[in-house]
Length: 416
Image (cartoon, rainbow, N blue to C red; front, side):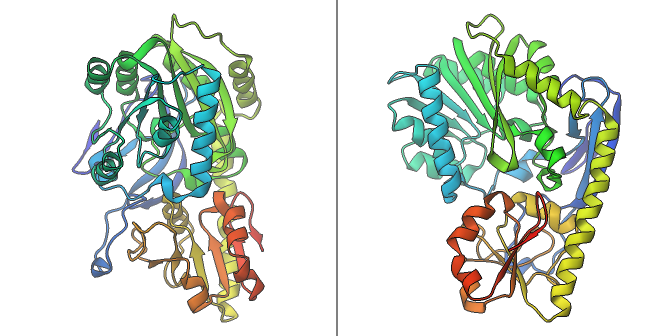
């Protein structure tokens, strides 16, 4: 690797170690996507890092090579799953499915890597399972532990996996939700989970699915926390090279389109499902194994930028006030690449108390509670948390009833 300070650059593919890497997508540099700041720091410039995606000609993996120090990204994390009713329901269904599918009985052991506020762990605990979380966000991990969920405030490493096994025994199920896109050293994570996992245990992970990202032009899911953009072909090879087997893959709706991967030890008992080969074939048919596909993806992003910025400029020319709803990490990418700042968007509504009262990364747009919609009555609200658009619109029908309009920027520009 090369680099200095808080940023360094890889020279090899994160999955296969290959060096035949081609830059296929160049987005506007941004600060870390969750680097919200206090109003007192409004006039301070925040460092921006390159945001360019590279395609591996050896294994077809898409990834960022510019790596921001994970200490900066995750130690003081502000995202928590429990503030989203959609995700609370998703995790409860997820836990029920895993318990039923793998016959997990009371007392079975579950480890969640990147456990955040323990939302998923709670769903397993209510079903009688023994749970353990590992998460580097110190304050969030501390609150989860105070809620009765043992949570280790650290990054997951091979040593962590061995310590889990020694102190808590082999784990029947290990989960990781979106974390498998967040880490630079994926091989180290696999070494750790292989140590922690029981011989017949299963590792289950969810990540944004590259096929959905490309087909729906979900470019804003590309940000510094997300170093890897996963598809089945390179993942299957990656696990096989580490004495593990990707034996099933399911498509799920999270984050505009994700996959849930199921992995076992190479000699584990679970049969390989046809979905693995089926999805790999679908990826080939969609061009995911060809760098040219991602260059075409870049051109579609340019078209979206033109359409959205023209629409908002027209609203502003008519004297309308524009706000936004949702301050997820992906909003930072969209705001920067589409060059939208406080001159266009007056404020951003978000339901997370951890973000309210702060300013968005770099652009420094105020983040406020949802009640502000009705106190200041903007004319137009851009839903930056577009994956929750139906729930947001349904909850805030009163805004529409009083003449307001919602703009949903992705997957397709829509005015409601």
